[in-house]
Length: 610
Ligand SMILES: Nc1ncnc2c1ncn2[C@@H]1O[C@H](COP(=O)(O)OP(=O)(O)OP(=O)(O)O)[C@@H](O)[C@H]1O
Ligand SMILES: [Mg+2]
Image 1: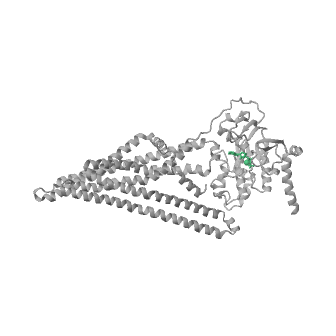
Image 2: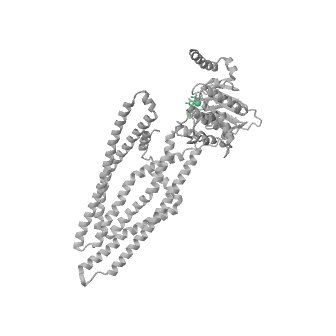
Image 3: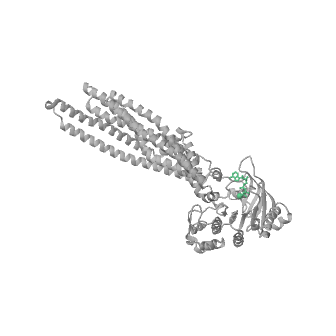
């Protein structure tokens, strides 16, 4: 998925479908460590009570000083009392700090363990998901769940969980203690909170929207840049530089517009919040001052409440700030849980007796299959393959050639009939065991970031394959030839887009890798479609040796390459329409002969023209 789409999708998916259900499930994930959770909660409560009591106790010192100053020499300030009060406050603050430290520590552990468990579950789940899941979900979507959503959850749990618990507890504790000390001042303090809340509630969604817009415009801009750079040769060929520049300038302007609005709205939020808090100070000072003057309130309590204004509005502000993060995180959790809830691959068994003495390596017996339940692609597919045979599969696009391979490796299970491997239905074999017998080379090459050597080694079942075996495979697949001409040879690092070697060369590497795996059955699905005909023929010849005692399935569009196959099956609409070797099929003068002649004839006039 492109960045822009990804961001747009992310924005759209921001709201969880079942917020509370998912939240409960997340809590359940954490509750495997319930003792730790309980311990943190206790410590949070304890440390918050300490923090809230401190201003009150400290206020008593102020009251005492104030009293002493007022009453003068007759009843001087009790400095012992003040010293004791200060000592108590010091102890309270120290204990609070210790509690806070441990609580941070434990929540961090809970968060990390929770994320670890979730990642592990996700990984295990992804390994058991049927190929169908990967075929029906885009790579971008799967990646964004496994990476972005997991990161979102990890970050929020680690950074915001403590914050959230703390804020809630602080809010309640301060409220209770305030009311216990002085009801009138409490009311004054509380009144200012809704004001700041209303202000935030009004501005925050607007700024969030602008931030979303900013992200989206940025995504579009990134896509534009990426597209024009990766396609810069196309842009140049068609002389579209001017247009592309204009598009870029327009998009930049849009981004600029969205960005400054977002920044402006965020910028005014803080002053608004401080303003309402200042209102609180103001209210407490006025009401408290009058109270002190009439002697209904002690000066120390006024001082304590000045601190409470801050202590009380802070958690409200923090929860408001966290609200969005929490929403996004719960939405991420939901997307991860969705994957966890997917049906895993079923362990199906065929209930078919193994044929002890099957003459066939592979046998398709009245196989029925369709990707959708109500739409069969193969209605009655039959094929027998003897050990060591090379089977070529040809047919028009969409005929079901790759489907045949998918069934063979059990990426999908048949809907009817049976596929047997050495007489045993493949459903009764362990998937891993079955797949270890195959090596596959596909049209779209998959190579990882790393040296050519390491990529080759990847195919081998041995931990440390000998240098000779690797070289042998490389030579057979004609990899050695071009690698020797590279400045770094086998140590050449393949980059992600594989732009440093050609598409055909990449295919050769994947072929060498498959050779190295030394499988019982080799599958080539248009594996040589990107190499030139001469190299293709060379590979065919080299393979000839490798394929001598090996069963193989070769899907090819270029018919010249499969002339020597033991058996050519011609497929159309999911079924076999012709079988035989090249000569048989040419004699039949059917579909294959038509295909072959068509390829041959178009080539001929060109040759003559040259
Ligand atoms: N994962 C899938 N889910 C649903 N339908 C699929 C899937 N893969 C293939 N199909 C459908 O099954 C049919 C056969 O596809 P298949 O890939 O086997 O063709 P093919 O013979 O390999 O074609 P090509 O020569 O283009 O590679 C097509 O109609 C295709 O749309
Ligand atoms: Mg195909």
